[in-house]
Amino acid sequence: MLPDVPDFDIYAIDHLPEKLIVAEQRLIITWDDGKISHYPFVWLREYSPDAGTFNDITREQNIAVTDLPDKLNISSTEIGADGSVIVNWQPENLDSRYHPGWLRAHCPSNPKPNFELPKRTLWTATRTAASQTFPPTFSGAQIDTDKEFSEWLGALHSSGVAVITDLPIEPEALEKVVDRIGPIRTSNFGRIFDVELKAETNSNAYTSQPLRAHTDLATREYQPGLQFFFCMENSVSGGETILTDGLAVAEKIRTDHPEEYAFLTEQPIPFVNTDRDSEYRYEVPILETDHHGDITTVRFTYWLRAPMTGDLATLDNLYSALRLFHHYADHEDYQLRFPLKPGDLIGVDNRRVLHGRTGFAPDAGHRWLRGCYMEREELESRLRVLDRQRRIRSA
Ligand SMILES: [Fe+2]
Image (cartoon, rainbow, N blue to C red):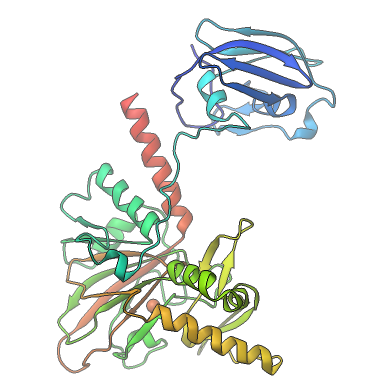
């Protein structure tokens, strides 16, 4: 029987090890396709699937690196009949058997993961005009299958927006779909919020006024990664949904306006959201980047900016950078506009894609959307698990 692996995945054995060499504190495997993988001793020892190192129920490590001997050595190596790699560790005298598919997938210098998240693709209104299927749209009648559901989630990850149409027009329809992804993130607006006209309101969202393209909850340290809207009713005149790819806007500014881009990525901007019994504040640049310089978060709830303080030159720069961002975010070349129909559910990456609406006449018809937040990592986790389950089923 093949050895256990330190996770819940399965690993195809596309290639077998042909030769094992121990040199310079590494195990070097030559595979049957000529590829060579180097595994540092401490790395290999840390992932030994034996019961002392790994808990086979949780598939988590029992040890820290400090629990391993300072000076590890391998006294013997062997390739098993099933292709497993067997080494004897000294001074512990521990025999470890490694799954060849797992070793190959996790080769430190040339990993080949079982699954990778769909790549992000930027979009603009101009670029999507030729496509009949943008935003990516799926039928509520087919979304029950894991395959269609995965495709919808993949489209949401890739484009930052994806739609399901023709769901049952009932208040529970939103939760029935999003509960299949992961836990909803509650906020001071509730676990599920109803976006409709409210006389006593704590947000511009609950009025009939137009809302320019924006993200939600910029005042939170961790701005929600996803937002879902489900349309229960939309019989008003106006109230079209607006979407802009904030990442496409940011990349345009990076290319054409480097000074403003530097300002937007480096200058902390204060945001505030006050209510009768809450007051959220956070100060951060409008565009956040990771260690590669890639944009991870667009933060643009424009009506929740707190009064800026600081030198006047910085204020001048702020206002010109904001105007520039609005210029593209509200420009028809970047913006999609379409009416939501009852039964439509739209998922949006709230740290990337800006949403808004045109104004509507408040006294004729009714516009009622149900909404909720979730984190991006729930979507990513669900995509990985659905793909893993698909591979396990077809193995
Ligand atoms: Fe919003």
